[in-house]
Image (cartoon, rainbow, N blue to C red; front, side):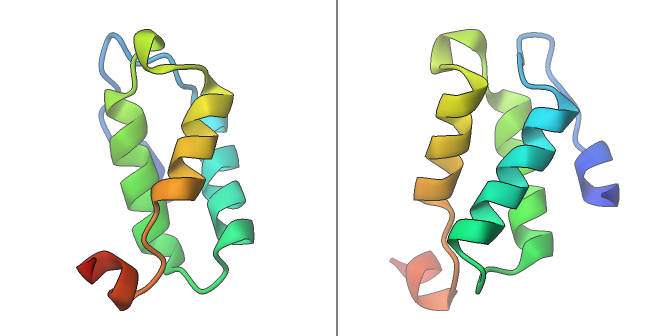
Length: 77
């Protein structure tokens, strides 16, 4: 995905590109109504800031699935 590679990875970020892609896929399975480009961009941005002390790649995936706002109503909340 083009959007994923455009995000700058910080030195402390412990997530790989594969972690990001798997997280985007998990979000889209859990929330198929979500805009895939918006999900990819948001997950990549969050991944760039995720550090080892924030949790594992699996914890990041769970965080993203729980926190992605899939529609306008959820984004407005």
